[in-house]
Image (tube, rainbow, N blue to C red; front, side, top):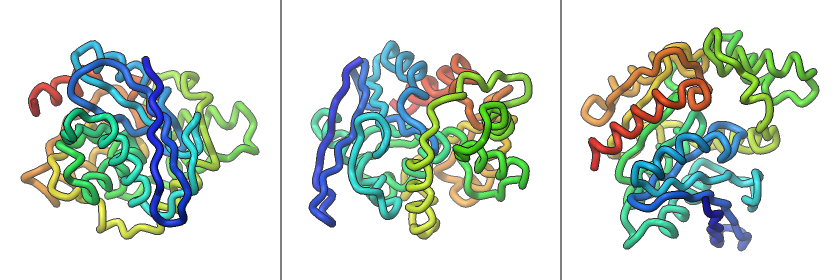
Length: 264
């Protein structure tokens, strides 16, 4: 695994953005974008499997996590620019990349495909939400995950409720939560009209939705497919919730690799 740094001037206030990107493997570029308030460690298993299968996996820490720095993003366009800069830096001969976005990262992936279509060949969206309202109990648990005042016991209970299917162990996600980053991401999301990015431009969308996802149930993917039937296809991941990546790593990787092979 190699740590690569992508630095650029954001062009708005003369401040530099530096993005820490963990890369491994050689081959077509696949950029992985993490969930709300989380970083590259979530993709450790999937990135290794992508590298072993002949792809260059690039997991990017968002601003504020690890060694990624820069001013707070104002809109989703700022996050999209981050990803576009990673693609332009790492992709050979300026070729577009496949983006894999998990949860909040899937929104960033769609924004990137909308604002920078020349950088994106296809999207794989994990736990794709936003089309269907979240049930109150799940919504509260999601908010509680980022409440730093909770006891360890109450925090892990919130992680279990919001992110994990019944019977799956949430301990793997006890740590790795960045409250300030999550708050900044939500502010940028709310400052951006949803209709400006939700469709992912004209890029093909492959949605992997877990069958026990309380935050982004299957109806989200179905709504997106109904809006864009010519571009959206869906796969269901059994026995997983919103966390998905640590819950069913083997099954998820198999679905992702099958899709990557299909799109060439």
